[in-house]
Image 1 (cartoon, rainbow, N blue to C red):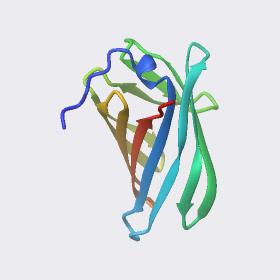
Image 2 (image 1 turned 180 degrees about the vertical axis):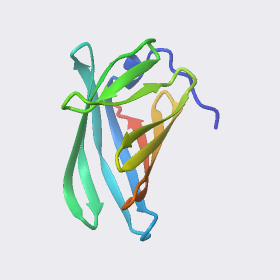
Image 3 (image 1 turned 90 degrees about the vertical axis):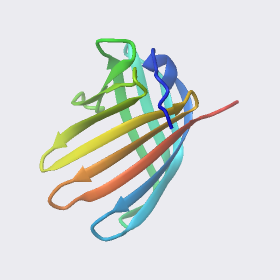
Image 4 (image 1 turned 90 degrees about the horizontal axis):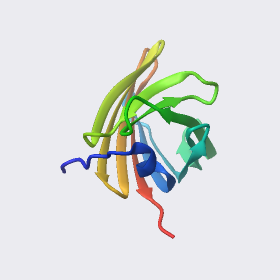
Length: 146
């Protein structure tokens, strides 16, 4: 499926999304899932990203959260993503509808590919490789309606 280009990433993401994620530990074959919501709302000149939901994974089943701050980057189709403590995570640029990048978090490396399916769906896939990790995390965001 051809990706959909995004001219203004902040406008594209703003609002509420449903999130569905599958988790796979490729070393052991262990599978899990995460279901919840993601809210992108104005914060500090960018967007705050608030992910809330329920995870089902052998080491934790129950509520799970994740927060990031997305700040303006060099062009409107891009945002720089930061952890809540201010550390840089990675840049996201969806001007072509797709984006691949990595985040090194020694001793692990996190590779991500984003794909804009439509104005109401964004998919991304993380591959995490390290001495003790061999994970595949596949996520779909679906714009909430109403």
